[in-house]
Image: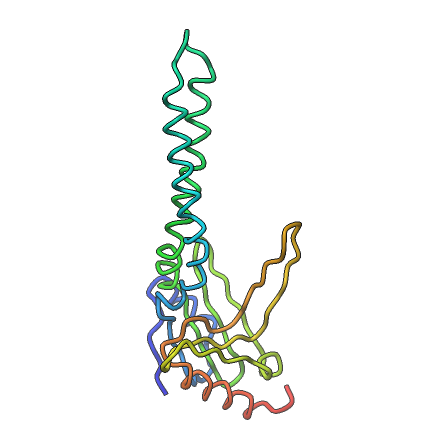
Length: 188
């Protein structure tokens, strides 16, 4: 089994957290596979960004009569939507960049996910909490292993959040390590 080195930005936290635990498997996600969940956002961002550019351009063409506040307000209002549209378009790139600060580990006692965007987030899973994991293949040896799904109901639809090892280069190695973890701790 492969044990990939932790990203530099979180290597100290990983060493502190896993002190004394035997590592069965460790890896970082594939950047583009990890960011694949953002492609729908980017697709929606195309018309949103295009319309916001058009709207802002048309607002700039409003004649400035005696320094009217409207002539200043509408273009500034449009720039806010241009910014949000650009953020939607760049969501997959931002996700790929964030993947560089994600690290997955399976030890003999637990499975751990380290994520650092603005602050470090550590999610630890016991063998019983991952026993019913779901494997999703993205073709070839790549894929994801999902430990849990949570659904958040909103006024317009719902948001599904998946937690697990997302965007793995080789999910078979991670699955073997998880199966060993579950076998080491049959009743924890």
